[in-house]
Structure formats: C-alpha cells, structure tokens
Image (cartoon, rainbow, N blue to C red):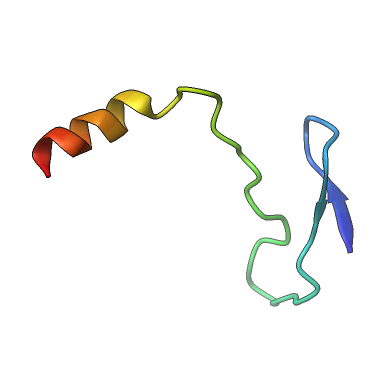
Length: 46
C-alpha cells in the first residue's frame, strides 16, 4: 500500500489495520538542523 504525505512524497503504508487506532502514520521528517541544539546539549550531559 502506498500513501502520499502533505508534501506530495510517496511512502509505504502499513497493511495492518486496527479498529481503534489512527489509520495514518505521522510522517513528520525533521528539517536539517532542527534538533541540533538538543542533541549537542545531550552530549554535554553524557
């Protein structure tokens, strides 16, 4: 099964369906550098 996200990109969709679960996966892809500060801050705490 193929689905299209809001940006028009095609992705494989899951063939398994559950009665009380959302039918669409969250396809948010982070933008370049979106989480850089959080990752670097986590490295300081390691």
